[in-house]
Amino acid sequence: GQQLNQSPQSMFIQEGEDVSMNCTSSSIFNTWLWYKQDPGEGPVLLIALYKAGELTSNGRLTAQFGITRKDSFLNISASIPSDVGIYFCAGFGNQFYFGTGTSLTVIP
Amino acid sequence: EPEVTQTPSHQVTQMGQEVILRCVPISNHLYFYWYRQILGQKVEFLVSFYNNEISEKSEIFDDQFSVERPDGSNFTLKIRSTKLEDSAMYFCASHYWPLEGVTDTQYFGPGTRLTVL
Image (spheres, rainbow over the protein chains, first blue to last red):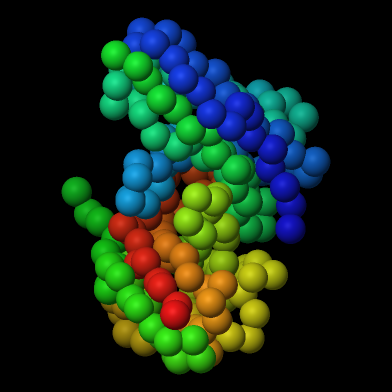
């Protein structure tokens, strides 16, 4: 199946710092999605992007759909302890492909 | 807030047994999905279902797997003869519109942890 390369794999940051993670693919997607997963729970959709070049915000989160349609990034500004979790990107063409996840730890 | 529910939360079964995982999607949703997540790994797409038929399936979704919407509310995933490597969290998800081009969100259930012994 298609591979989505997500980086970094893990991040340890101080509370208040900004976070940036990205996702790249060898294939074009029509939709990019970013999810957060807390331990023992299902993923929660954070942001959905539908057009190449689109920049969308959801509170402290900002995500962009790359103009090549092969990449996307997610930024979190002014991180807080409850941002801890694993963040997954997903690309949607005719089915969903998920990235390998970025584990975020926020140190108070 | 509407939610997707899944039962059971944990299923333990012997290798070779059949299991049925159940999901109740949000009532007015039209698109349904099953995903799995092996412990510590990424979420993997299994199958999507729309208009009472499978619309897409991944290479993981082989002949051992089947899905059904037996009534207006339930959406089930059946694994006919479980293998050790089927041990994973299985998530159901649903949404209303096609995700492409329309602002909507996809809701995930809490998951069923399947353990095959």
